[in-house]
Length: 164
Image 1 (cartoon, helix red, strand yellow):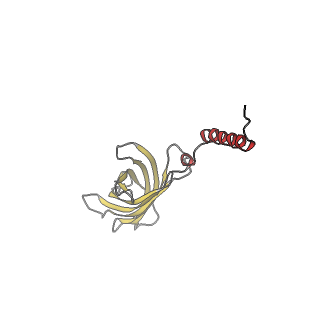
Image 2 (image 1 turned 45 degrees about the vertical axis):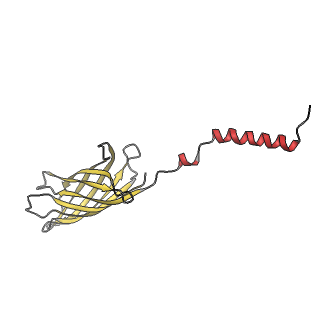
Image 3 (image 1 turned 90 degrees about the horizontal axis):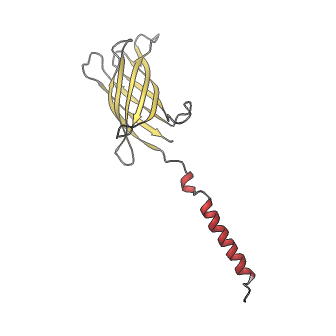
């Protein structure tokens, strides 16, 4: 019987080891973090009529790459008293849903504006309900306009980003 050359025996052993390690080792692609998403946001903004009522923010977050609706936002707007008599300010609390309606993120933030114009700015952080509640995974911010005395809701527009 012929004895294999030591070079071929070593090469065969290394090849077998590489195959075993290849099957046992996790792929790099599976451990990579999901890509960030971002784009424009817009919708309706209905400020609270008084300090004892809630308003409503309804809209969509569009993926800036695909130009398709990535999420819907529904959040309550709660007025917060301010020492500034010409100012409006409040809290934003709600969630982001997929186009199919599944709630996937929580949203918390604030809005500030003018009593006289009903317009201002808002910013909120986006949280993953399955992750640490203190670590945001994204943000949404922009402007709103809901003139006082109007019988229809106002509007908001802004930008968002989520990096899970």
